[in-house]
Image (cartoon, rainbow, N blue to C red; front, side, top):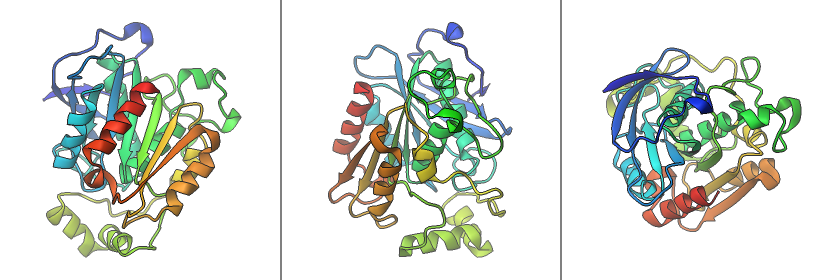
Length: 297
């Protein structure tokens, strides 16, 4: 496994597109080491685009559902996958969507360092909320300069004081959020009540560690991160696709509708008939449609 840290990558320094599979250890801005995998495109592409996949809670780069997404997406573009902190071989502890935005930023910056000028983030469930926050908090250089219809002074303002990542190559050019919550602390379904027990109780964290191979941080959020619905309103001018199943057992369809309403004309909403939750429920047909949306955008 090679070792690289999150870089500050001006366009002039981008090298020719990498065409070989890679594994790497990326360093997030807070020093946490994140395992990552690069799969080059297997189809005919111009090498411009990479898709960065953000998995759901208890997932990792090697989970079958994540690898299925890679196989489908890689027919259209190169793919970067990574394990969020506390998951897989990554270091640290899961903060269930808070500091994970730093992990995603490191993966996006790595994709650009491999020669890809256009990077699209695709997140599932927890990863879906992370790609929304990342899209809001990491402004593109064009948005920073006032081009493309950014939303004024609030565009890309971080919870912890100011903009982040604008010149680091860590921004996304488009965002796809699948099965994401619209608001934090939702307990309206039985699966979410079980998840809250897993995260907030010592016995639950033990189950997470040994049953799901996920190390969960014991401290509560302080401050509470920007909510997904608030983040969705800040992603424009980058294109945003929101995908959600009408049989999602975790988050009912009012969640994607809230996200789409917040984003307004900047978002496209797909409500998928018969679909359940996140990457495990995303079949090859849906993944192909998402990949097609990515390359068309």
